Amino acid sequence: MRRPSVPELLAAWERGLEMGPVSRALELLAVAFPDTPREELASFTIGNRDGLLLELRELLFGPDMAGFATCSGCGETLDVTIKASDVRVNPPDDGDSRLELREAGYDLQLRLPNSHDLIAASGAAPAQRRQVLLKRCLVRARCDTDDVTADELPAEVLDAVVKHLAAADPQADIHLTISCPKCGHRWQAQFDVLSFFCTELEAWVRRLLREVHALASAYGWNERDILALSATRRTLYLEMVGT
Image (cartoon, rainbow, N blue to C red; front, side):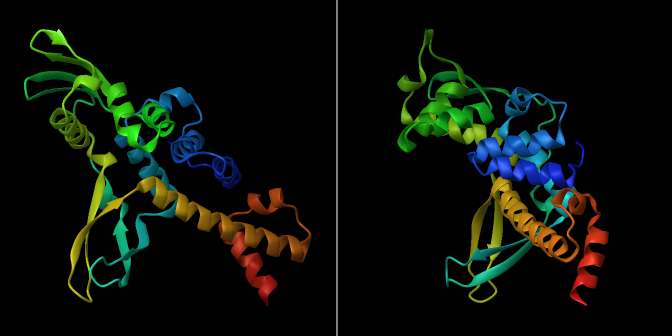
């Protein structure tokens, strides 16, 4: 993984504005892995993809991750700060995305979902997305000696498949335990690294463009030259503009 330049990251953010969340994730990874084809990035399991996004986010913004949560008990807004290491999960030792499961008399061969699968599922009606995802990730299903399709699997087997896939790719399904200091309520909140990263990136871009505007207005410099400055030099120039 390489650290993207400021112009590269800004351009990736701008391109991502017209994209869905999965494509936006791939756009961000593409600037960190310029020699890796997009198709290959999209073939990473969701857990591996999210692990790389977390690594890129830490490379750009550091290990501390600050956000907000609303207590479901009393409605209090809480400041929540965690470390990137708190939500990093080591990948399976074998790195194999193929899985086997036996449930209620069915023998199933599965693979972990990737970004291609999520993009395909996002094009279906909301009620059909889980089924589309399961169809794509089901390599083979047999009951006794007969092959069966995903549509023929009973609900209990489908539920077991979902749980099995989640357990096999834990980086893709991170939950935080949060405790409210006001009322003592504790609950589990899902952590979406892509959503968190994009929110931080949006705030960074807005701060950066305000700096560009201030320096361009003061000195007449163009955006390219301002972005070429280090963050330290931009800060010093902004301090002089403010004096």
